[in-house]
Amino acid sequence: MVRVHGSLMSIFSVVLAGCPCIGFDDTPYERTEDFTATEEEAEPFEGPDGELLPDACEELCIAEFGTSHIDGPQDLQSCELVSYDPQYTEAYLFECTFVVSPQCIGGRRPAGLASSGTSEGAEPIGRWLAETAHLEAASVPAFDRLAARLSALGAPAALVAAARDAARDEVEHARVMTARARAHGAEPAAVRVDPMPEPDLEHARERELEALAVDNAVEGCVRETWAALVAWVQAEHAEDLALREVFVGIARDETRHAELARSVSTWLEPRLSPRARARVRAARDRAVAELRRTAGRGLPEASRQHLGLPSRAMALALLDGLQPRLWAA
Ligand SMILES: [Fe+2]
Ligand SMILES: [Fe+2]
Image (cartoon, rainbow, N blue to C red; front, side):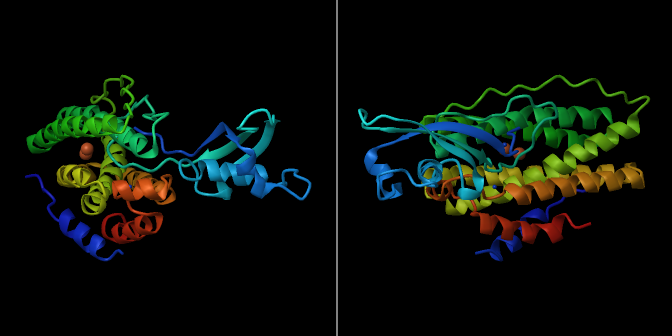
């Protein structure tokens, strides 16, 4: 008999009430950009003889990229004046290097995800929607693989069927989010997934069970659970009312997927050795720590509000609420 968890929604309700955000790679990365400034824009950063003050480049870089890529001076690596030519309106050319912390997007990624999903060139809202659409599309093979591995390991038919249903949900999520991204001028990257070797169930069944438990703990019990909670926040707070409706549907589905992850975990747990269980818990705890590092960051305030995403402070408060209820044992 499969134990189906139905308590997640009540946990979410408590966490949300107590509070006043993918295979998208969310590792911070360095980025170098050129930008220009007019004499007028540079003037506040000039000394008495018209020379640029020592921190002019940094200040202008923050003004240029502070609403789209970076949070503040702590993200700056270097900045230098490349050229000055008063013949042009944009007289100054600078080069700035900064660290970008991508907005953490939850959701289940397949092992072997080879596409980053990063969407260049669009405005922040379009970029977020395109990156989310890429992750939704990546969740389809993730659930197909989950269903196949559960079936190969002899899991109950109800769990296998629920994973297949979830794959169908993700097809629809990807379709809806792709349409929203395109409406904002952004095109989601195509999903590429490397082939995985066939599991050796005859000789390495325990290893396969542990690998599935780690994958399910990180991608399901942490990332999809977070995605579900964030979708509920967006369903309530997105300034874009059409997006609110989209997120109500996604939030319901993602909550069911997060409950499936708990059910998969419940089935797997007694089949693991105590050492394997400890390694699964450690992987889960690392995923939670990574979430704490990135959640609520990486988007300009106006874009965050348009999408209804939690602020950094709210994201941390939500994680504080979830941690003891879901990820403490
Ligand atoms: Fe989804
Ligand atoms: Fe999902």
